[in-house]
Length: 149
Image (cartoon, rainbow, N blue to C red; front, side, top):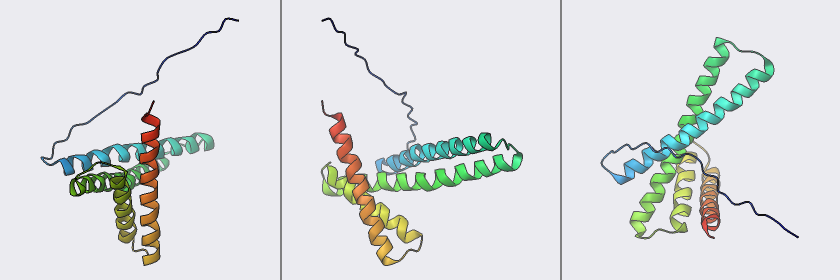
């Protein structure tokens, strides 16, 4: 019985913006901020657009609200992404090796810093640090396993 096979690949466009701050740590931190912040702002735009179309209510006030939400989400998630990328790079430089432990430590420090900045309790800071470390480690392992043939 004859059979056929479909083979191909799907790639997404890649856009890199080069901002040279003269320091690799700053370069990576700004790059992380811009990339994650843009994704978050795009998500906020898509979500609000859906709700506006669904309600049929398009006004200057609703557009201003969408823009404010985009800025707020982009700044928050961009800050989180920038801090994480900077912390992971810092761990790599301090430890002198590139492995999953840098991601874990970067996630722990990012979770703790963001939690402490919002004046949470000590228990919440520890919980957020654990969550940040677990999420970063899981993402690193998933990326590692998905890139292997």
